[in-house]
Structure formats: structure tokens, C-alpha cells
Image (tube, rainbow, N blue to C red; front, side, top):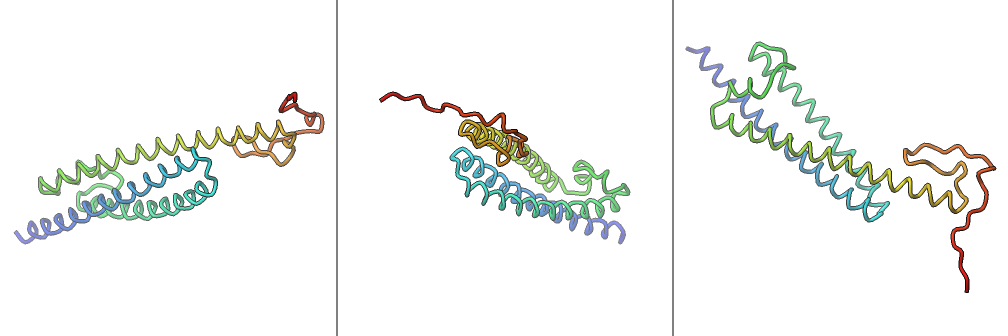
Length: 178
């Protein structure tokens, strides 16, 4: 009887921690999405300072996410020992067996929302990377047209371009008559 009461108390505490952790993950994912969306706007507006600033903010958010990931792993280890399985084998379905029905519903809803947010962040980040690649390729093209493509230029992947003097022939950019 005492053992059952201790497990119930332990399960309730674990439930509170899991729900709290999922909420913290959601808050972090929303912040991350906001940064990625703002960065996309800055890229489209060719706001170089904004892109650089938001890249720094993005890095800080990713570091916060890493801390949350470490907390998640510790939480899974504790849940795993309660469930008698390795931490890596703990799933939301297994965790829900320790929760009351209302908490299990909340955990499922938060988990689904988190997955959706992270998928959106990933998709928008890929769009931003593609836009940045296009901008770098366009800049590279302009530098070549201006005859300034030597060792100072970079390709869309950010790699230095190898050029030789034979490639530095003049280009007609404008052909105007007055």
C-alpha cells in the first residue's frame, strides 16, 4: 500500500515535470520560429545588418534549445528507470501510462504542437538558406560582371572562387547612346 502511494506521488511529480518541460520546449520553439521568420524578412529585404543580428539571436536560441535537450534526456532517464526501460526507449505513449487521463491529453497535445512548430522552423530555415544562396549567387554574378571576381569573390556556397587573369576580360554592362 505504501509502495503504491509512493509510486503515485512519484508519477504525479514526473507528470508535472514532463508537462512543464513540454511547455518550456514550446516557448523555445515559438521564439525560434519568430527569429527564423524575421530572418526571412530581413533576407528578402536585403537587410544585411538585420540578417547578421538575427543570425546571432538564432545561435543563442539554438544554445537554449541544447540546454532543453539535455534536460529532456535527464527527464527520459528518470522516466526510464521508473518504467524499467532505458531512457532512450521512453516514448510519450509510455509516459502517458504514468499520467492521469487529463495530463496525458495535455502531454499529447503539447507534443503534437511541438512537432508541428519544429517542422515549420525547419521548413522556414531551409527557405532562408535557399534565399541566402540565391543572394550570394547574384552578388557573385554582379562582381564577375564588374570585373571584380578575382580572389575576393565567393560562390553561393561561400567558398572562394579560383580565377585566373585570362578570365578578367572586360565586360560591357551598359551599351548606351546619347
